[in-house]
Structures are given as C-alpha cells and as structure tokens.
Amino acid sequence: MSDTGHTAPSEVFGAADRAGDYIEEDTIHTIPTPPRRKATSTASAPGTVLDEPAQAPVPGKAPAMKEAPSVPPVAPTDRASTSVLFGGSPAGLASASSTPTKATTGFRGALASLGLPVGPGAAELGERRRTELQTAHETTVRQATWTRAVSVLVNNPKGGTGKTPTALLLGGALAAIRGGSVAILEVSDDPGALNFRAEGNPLLGLGELVRDVDHVHTAGRLAGYTAPQTSFASVIGSTGRRDRLTGESVVAVSNVIDDFYSIRVMDSGNVPTSSAFRGAVSVSDVLVIPVMNAGDSVLEAIQLLEELRAEGGPSAELANRAIAIRLTDGRPENDAVREEVARLLSQAGVSALHEIPYDAHIAGRGQLTLGRLNPATRDAFVAAASSLVRSLQTAVSAAPTQNRKA
Image (cartoon, rainbow, N blue to C red; front, side, top):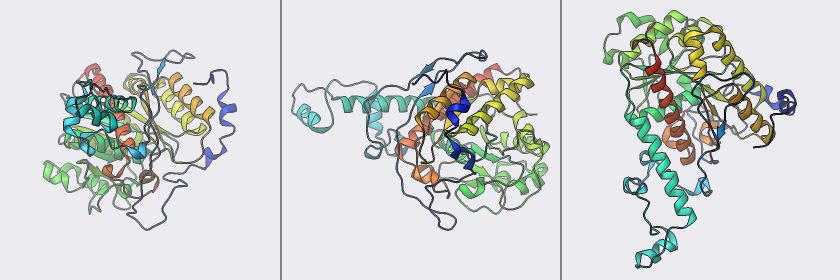
C-alpha cells in the first residue's frame, strides 16, 4: 500500500468530484429496460481485508492491516466458483484440505495420471488454496449457532453506496449456506428499493405488516408478508406507498420476525437521526457499512461511527464491531483514493474491510438473484458473510442478556 498516511483526506479526495454525483442505484453500467431487468456478467478480483481489532480503536492510530491470502492470479471470468453451492465439486472440496502431492488438472494432471511423479503447478495450488479458504468460510457460516435471533444493520448515511444490494446479497449468502431462516427487512423512513431489487412481486409487505403486526402469531401468517428468494431468504419490503416508518414500528416488527427467523438483516435509509434508524440501532447486533471509493462515502461512514461511539453503551459496541464492504460500480477509480479509503476505515476502527468486485448484475439496477452473480462476486460475499458471522458470535457472547428484544 502506498504511504497515504501523510496525505490529508481532502487532498486525496479533491480529485474525486464524481463522488457527489452518486445517487442510490445509479451507475454508468446500466441496462435501461423495464422493471425486472436481466444483465450479463463480468468480474474483478477481490482485494484486501483489515485485521479485526479486539478492542476499540485508539484515536489517531490505525489498526494493523493484513492482506488477503496470497494466491496466483486467475482470471475471474475463466474460473468457476469454488463454492459447492454454486457448481463447485463436493469431491473437490473434500479433497482440498488433504493437499495431494500429485497434479490433478491440465497437462501436468494428465502426466500424473500415467503414474509419473508430477506435482501440481502454481495455478492448481492457488486454486486449491482458494477452495480451502472458501470451504472454511462456508463452514463458519453454516455451523454458527446462537441462543437467540441475531440482527444485522446495513447503513451508510450517504446514498448510492449499495445498501440495498449489500443487504440482499449478504443476507442471501447467509440463507443459501444455512438453508434459510434469514429475513431481509426494510427499515427506511419512506419506501426504498428493497422490494424492487428483490425477486418476486408480493401482494403484501412492510406497510401491511406494520398495520397487522399485533395479529401475527404464526410463521404461516408472517410468510404472507414476505417475498421468498431463490437464496432461501425472505424479503419484507414496501409494495407501495406507506406511512413513514417509526422506531416503535421497527422494534415491533423486528420482535415478530425474531420469533420465526434466526437472522434479521435490515436495509436502512439515509437519515441516521430518524426515529426508524434509532429503532433499528436498538435491535441490532452488528453494523455493516457499504462504501464506494469516494470521499463523501467514507467520510459519512466515519461520522456515523463517531456518533454511535459518542452515545456509548450498545451503540458504541455496534460501532466497534462494524464491518465495511467496498463495492465498485465500474467508474474509473483513483488508486490514491482507494488506499485512502482503506486507511481511513482502518483508523476509524472498522473491524474488517471486504472487497466486492464489479458485477454487471448488481450494476444493472434490476432484481438481484444470488445465483446470477459472477463466481468471484459470490465468493466475496461468502467471505464477508463469514466475517459477519464471527462478529455476531462475539456480539451475542458479550451481550449482558440473551434477549435482544427492545
């Protein structure tokens, strides 16, 4: 990483005038067709991960950063997903950890099959390491348990940072690996894009659930307000205009959802002082902050962390467990800005920074289907889900009570 520690954020971000042009769901890679659009796929390689601090950050001092595992580069468009969920071979996953000494693929594999003592090449070894790492991520997500329902709040006060895609795809990855029991809930003051970006066209949604919440006592009744996803997640968004959401309504709906789902992922709005956002904070265990490589995106995220820490108590703990997910919309990016974003997030005490490569399916602004993402994108979301699960386990074990309901 370049030494950006001696460069003022304003200087680095001064050349990023495009940051002010970000609006929710807006990218230059769009497909201007009617609702329920479909997009083709491309991919980029994932990046680095921040080391997870065990305690609150020291002002002015950035936590240590570690690079993602070093493996030989493989063109993302040329490789399949290493996940067994998305076409990976169960046999391959089972044998990955044993690290066989003979080559099994390509020309070297052909020679080894003839009995020659030919070991795997750099590309094959790199793919084995990727497979082992991805298998470990999935195992972490699948086997995590809690003694109560847990919750995730996705927020960045800056619009256009990918809150809705992050909530849908991160929640979808959790549900796909765990076999369901994940609800993705809209908690923005006014109707957001969650219902539009999700699969399906439900008749009832958040507005109706808020109205009927006192009468929902069974899983079957609650299912009537959801949009089931192919990832096995259940989405509760707004199907039309509704009353402005209040903190009391967020808490009431969350309590009902927690009776029937083990994980609740909340897609929030852009007003951190609103009643709905404050209600969401009160029933959250881990904060996920989507960011772009732009000045206002990261600076508003840092301001949110500072405000939560200033409140103390559970809000401060939420900030100290925050995870950042960096997305890219395909616009030209400045390396100095990328490095400054990572440095500032590290200095702000973000426990992990996960890179999500560009994906035309996300940038297309249509409905999102987990299985239609590029393999590298899916694998990146699985890695982020693994980090999120570890933070959830820490949050639950550190909680003074096992009842998170407000």
